[in-house]
Amino acid sequence: MLHVFIDTNVYLTFFSFTEEDLEELRKLLVAINNRELKLWTTAQVSDELRRNREAKVAESLAALRKLKPAQAIPQMARNLPEFNDFVAAKREFERHLNALNEQLAQQFHDGSLAADSVLGELLTAAKTIKVDDATVAAAQRRTAIGNPPGKKGSLGDAINWECLLAAFPDSRDLHLVTGDSDFVSRMSSDHVSTYLAEEWRNEKHSEIHLHRRISSFLKDRFPNIAVASELEKELRIRQLVESPSFAETHRAVSALASYTDYSEQQAKELLEAAVMNSQIASIARDPDVHEFFTELDERYGHLLDATNQARFVGRFGPDDEKARSDV
Image 1: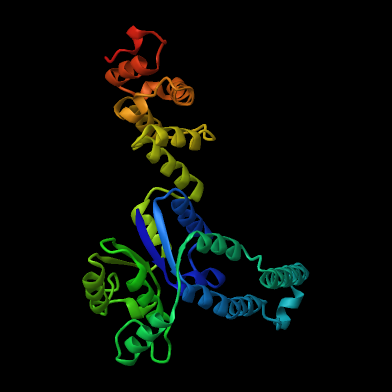
Image 2: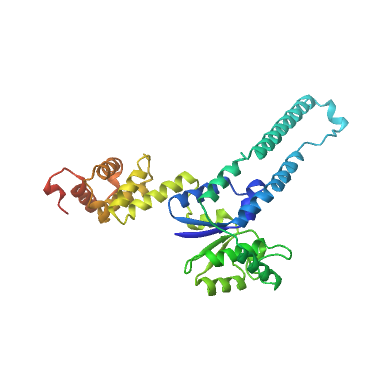
């Protein structure tokens, strides 16, 4: 399982200007729900998000309003045949722009912006570390003596760091997603600062990996997945292929019941697992397992080589002792 901490500044970009899409947050949620990833957060992050959301949205709406076309039009343009069409298009543009601003402002007040919903689900699914007096005192000391992370007069980064040092499990690597330069090495923008990396290694006996964007982290881990629904499907396939028990096999088969189409690679992996993974093959006659794999074989059985196809028939074919014997 991957362990991830996302800094507040990354979450706030979804209320502002970013190349990231909300689909990246949905992918994280899928990975959490499928037990591939554990997201860590702190009460400090939640406070910072609520505190700065208004300013970010106001900044974004102000920038949106500035998109209005210039009011002054050269006199020589007024005699062109297209001038009236231009004026009408300009008015239509302004009408749509005003409507966008009004809708977004209302959604802000209602707490119903698209980012509100996805971030709410994500942080609810995360493991939240409380901020107590001891954590604040440790952060104050850290800032007072000049140790990173953090800026003079601000304890936020230091509090988050102290929370992680106190509550994060030992011997587990942490993936840190942040756009804050206070965490970054001055020698390489791809690494955490040497001081923080060494402190983490000494305290937690593990490594800390830096990612500047959620999308770059996900690309490293799930390079071929474009949308959250595909990631969910891929993770469910992996859970069945790698099933460690009969119970997990039944659970994974149930999770895949709603899917009807697979890529050839996905189908081949599933069919090969049906004969190679004993936690699937041994319960081939259980109704749910048998129905799932026989239907899969009807569509994709041609992808198996002759040996594996014979083994598949031996497990899932006609129900008699001879047919069920291993090939």
